[in-house]
Image 1: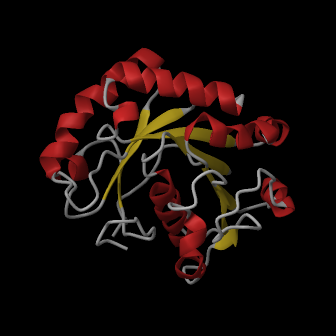
Image 2: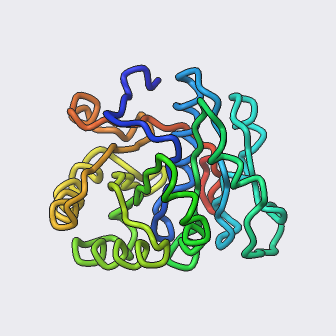
Length: 232
């Protein structure tokens, strides 16, 4: 499905941050699946200790079946959130030849997890990408995207390296919704001086122009179960 998806630069560690409802866990899961498909060992770290409803940990069995090593919080799958990193997380900074994807908790509170990994992140080949859904109120306008970007970068104590276009309304998403979001996201990216590294969408919602654009488009399948949604 993603045979034509390629990035100009692939980093050893890729961390995805974003506002609540950005869809970063779905992007993280699908990015890890794509990486695994390139033939490299991949570890997906579920570091979302803030939100119990949209975690990659909940899709662990399906992802492990794709050959992805999962590192999950001790209390994932319960209603208990403990702000402590699993010791295995730091091991991903020392795996030669492999890649790691970090799914970071939403909002600035969740992004503080990255701050605790700042020494390791600074010494490794890393990228921190902000996933943006302009259909969510926190990132619906250029101004709000800029506010969220500043808040997340400050909380993580790391600079953002790029943006990911992931506008969606779950099953109500249509190509026009995604096309209308592009100018908003691009203006924010221009002001921030950051690239829109790639777009992400489920195949039936992806505009034809996204598939042919110079900007890569990651076509996603559903791994995360969303309350109130018919999609799994």
